[in-house]
Image (tube, rainbow, N blue to C red):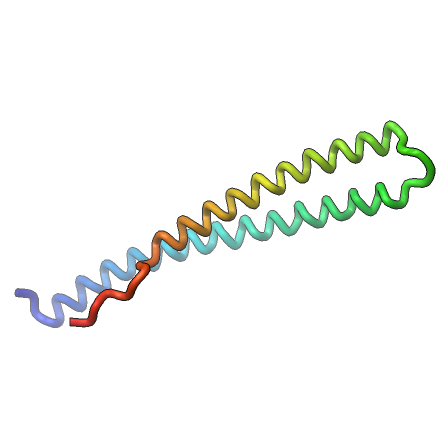
Length: 101
């Protein structure tokens, strides 16, 4: 049977590894969120550009619309990747706290 000191050291070692994995997952999640903010800002700028275009839809306007569709699809893919990263982060945490001996 382990002494209390040995049990504490084993727990600290295990918890440190867990904290490092969780920290890395959080860092990746934060970085991905920052990228999504830039994507959304770029989409909003393109939308504003289209809204300020006078007259009929020109070939240039259509090219902007097509670009918006592509950018929107890319932002959606990044959002889905963000959700996957958050699910992975959630998987690192125990759903229920372990019982205290």
